[in-house]
Length: 480
Image (tube, rainbow, N blue to C red; front, side):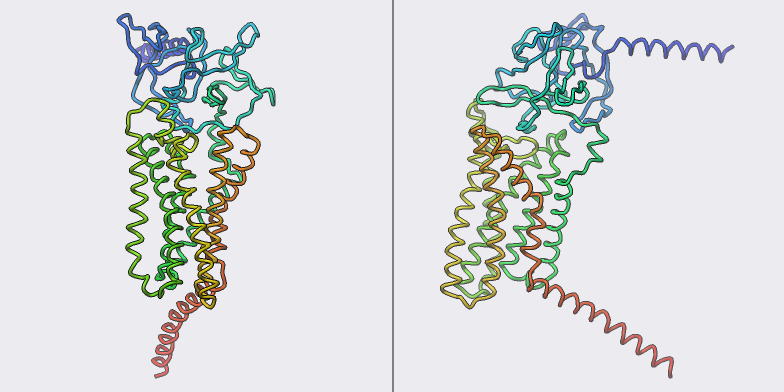
């Protein structure tokens, strides 16, 4: 009898729990109330809307930027979407956005444009508890969609219905106005199993950059010459930049790591630009002076390049700490977007594209001067000719990527979307194959392959000779 009583008690508790759960609405119909005011009657005030206590429940999980539910400390969520129709945004809109429009198909079938910030009939719901500052502006999206009042999204291309679990809306700027466009959330299994061609290219590219670095460290000629040392520094900067650029999405839900990734990436981009200038100067100086005199100057190049990049980073970082109004922020503050330095506002022209454009122009001018020195003043200098050829190929590849980035930025300003699509595709294609291209430019050359082969043969002979000697000694001992 005692066992039956305990069983009935447990069953009763489970039934009560199920009954309570059935009264709660789904996670994506609720809002986080941790920053909301709790009233004396147990209700919460969320954006001037009162959520009664019977629609407030305790939750133990929260969705992350990687679209996984993770366990957190217990907190309260309110079933807001059962009180008023919700519009689900991915993130908190930037403070200077005053209007945010979206077309909604109402229950009566009519379509109406609403402003989710100022509209009294609809309420704004946030999927990820973070600012839109860290998200990139959705430049491309499928226009064939309809948002319904019940929160479902209708894709008119394939006539599918997308629930709140699988989408959210992002602010998108058109001229001076902001509109909401959908961001489709892929199921978790597809996110981790899907490996497209571009992703494979990125992996191969990083692997090739690693091979270039190892070869530079392995060959004495590439390891000791000033030109080769500076080239290695440039390659290391590019490698770190690529890794940070392609892995930044992993840190979107970690604010400190996200900002750290953005600033480290900016520092490496500026450093790679400065190392190109250093290589150019060294080649020009080798024509004017004896190569042996350059060895002692390597420390000077390190101080100048890393120090100058640090100064640029300090200026950019300190500007972000200044208190400005919204209009000035767009021009003077290089805030981070998508765990990278913002490349879509006017501030990018000052802190990002500006230095890059100046660096490209100076490098091209210096290259022309160096080219004249090599072929006019010292036409017999075959080593410097080979070095300059390799460097010129590197600067052309890097320069093309950077020029395409600048072109893409200009096309964005003038809303020339079709041309921008082709420019971005070309840029990504070259960028994703950068390591492979650089491998052929720097390592896949007769002189380097000959050095590599000679050193490997020498190492093999050094290992083989002691083995032969030991075998010969052993044979002699047996005979005796």
